[in-house]
Length: 418
Image (cartoon, rainbow, N blue to C red; front, top):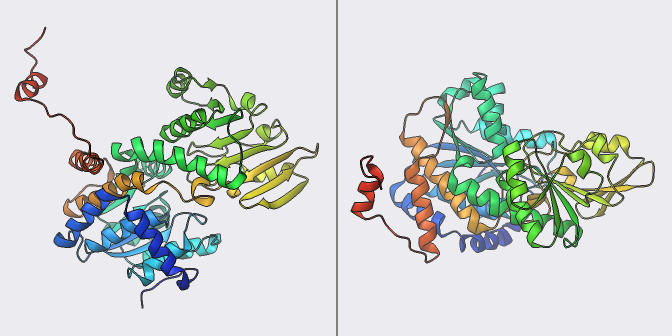
């Protein structure tokens, strides 16, 4: 029996249907899986992955297994697991999964321990929790890992900090920084799925509302773009002058959060940093303000401050909505306990955009196994980026031009001028 800890194996049939539906919109990953099945580039390699357990992730897991990997999959967020998908991966596809939607803190780390007990030589992370725990609690296992793939901005921040401190002891790939990931997954995936999660949780009319977007990285850009398109008055808050200037030139109002707090109807944090919304902001928010987070960890909203200010808490006034009443009678509504709104209240990114991200993940895993890499944070190889982009274009029926020999010569020359 495949080792597992999932909610209910009776959900497997529905999970299989969901996985197959997602696969229909993942032609690039399917192409990779077909080659992996023939070549087995990961044969005999033990892998542990700490990812959001969704239908799209299931197709990545199937691809890694097709390549010969002995895989254990655990959840990277307590509220992102799709229980039917977890059951299907075990029952229908023979993949070891430890993930239950709503699992508590203790269970979450017990599942990460199960991934580490698998003795992986390759790891895959969505937030760097798996790599961090290996370094801090299982240092004897660090040396056996030939490569780790990191999918999120938050995780890359942690890994670069580890490397700067001399604490990183394994080679890791910044998959999040691949153009075939952040330019599409972060912008279009997060942009659309964050809107989806907010609307599912609140049935909130976007048009005419003042929507405050904290952070104008690629995820923030995508979300702000979608909000603007739906008729919102979008306000951006930033700490980076270049990004703030870009937001202003993209047509958004830019101001400090202390100013935005007093006028916003909906606040969404997408920064990767801690306590972006906190006491001084809650004290200024209008009655009925809604706050949500689309960053990886539930630290961007200081929930302790919110609870300390509240005289009453109204749990689950609507599914994935908690109400907090202030002493002056104002109510502030927190979505999905401050966790990733797009996965906690919706289904995460559309399969079409995850097709590129997960094809890049799978191919980078193959690259890590085949190359003896030094400790550090590595970029995704250009040949992987180009393959994924061209394969996606082909699946969309789009062709592009190629340089002529004369054009290649011109671009390579310094002697030809006007």
